[in-house]
Length: 425
Image 1 (cartoon, rainbow, N blue to C red):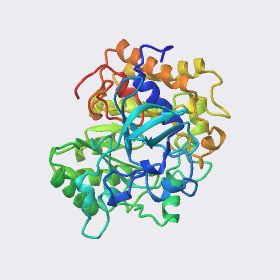
Image 2 (image 1 turned 90 degrees about the vertical axis):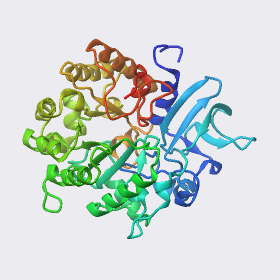
Image 3 (image 1 turned 90 degrees about the horizontal axis):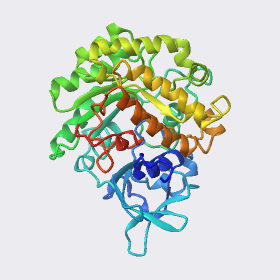
C-alpha cells in the first residue's frame, strides 16, 4: 500500500485474496441452499486452490459466493471479493468472540466481513426440481446472471486446453461428487429460472446476463457457436425485452457470426484474448492458436467493434499467467511491459479490455507448476498500468459491470473496476 499510493488500498487486499485464496473457518461456511447465506455456485471454473475432496468441510458446506470487506485498521471502503478457497491461505474468514465475521491475517483482524444474503429467487425451484442456483446463478452481489449454458470445452486434452483453465475438470469433479451440474442447459430451464428471478428480484438488483461456456469447434445440438449461444439470447430478449443487458463470452468469431450475436439481442461481446505475448499465447492457449490463431483472433476483435461499437467489445485476459513457469516472463518489469503493450493496442482502437485475476487451480498444468500464482507486485502494477492507459486514450469504465470506484464496484474477480475513477454505469 505504501509503495503504490495511487492504487486504492482496497484493491491491494482484494488482489492478494484473489491470487492466493482464502481459508474459511467452519463458522464462516454457508448452509448451502437451505441457509441464510448465498453459497458459492461454481458457475464455470472451480476458482479454488484445492480440489473438492481436499476442501474438507468447505466441500460439504459451501463457502459464500462472495464476501464484502469493510472497516478494520485500514478503514476499508466496501469491497466485493469473489471467494477462492485455499485452506493454506494466511487469510482466514472466521467469527470473532463477538460472533461477527472478520478477515484475519497473522492473528489480527484486518477487516469486517459481510456475506451475501440468500436471495429470495434461490428459494424457489424450477418445475423439474432443479434449483435456480444451478441453472442461473447470480454473482457480483446479484448484479450479473451467469448463464454457463455449455459446461465443457471442445478444446479438450493436454494439446488443446488452455493451460490455466479447469472448466473440464470442474465439470468432472462436480459429477464425481454427485452434485447437480448440468452439461448443456435447456432453453426452457433458462427461461423458467429467469422468470423466477424476474418475479422475486423486486429491487431489480440484477442488471445483466452473460451467456458463456466452453469453446465450440464443431457443433452442439446441431448448432455452431454463434447459433448455439445466440438461441438463448434470442429467446431471453423475446420473453424479457430490455429487462437485462445481454452479454456473450465466445471465441473471436468471423464478422457474420458476430452480426448474428447482435441480431439475436446481445449488446456486449467478450472475445477473450487471454494473454498478449505471442510466444506465451501459442504455448498456453494451444487450442486457440491451432483453431483460429493469435493474429486472426486480434483481427476479429477489431472487426467486431464495427458491429457492436468499440465500447461494447470487452475482451478479457487472465492476469498473472504472463509470469507462469515454465515459459513465462522472469521479471515483473517484463510482464507488465508485455501486458501494457496489449492494453495500448486495443485501447488505441477504443476497445477496453478487462481482466480476471489468475487463480492457479491445482488440476491445471500452470496451477500445478505455480501454486503461488503471480506475485502481488505484478497485480498491483497492472492496476497502475491499466489506470494510466485508460487515461492516455480517454476511456472510461466499460459498460455491463456496474458502478466503478473504490467502495462502489461490484465486479468481484479482479480489482480493475475498484481502481477506476468513481462513475455510475
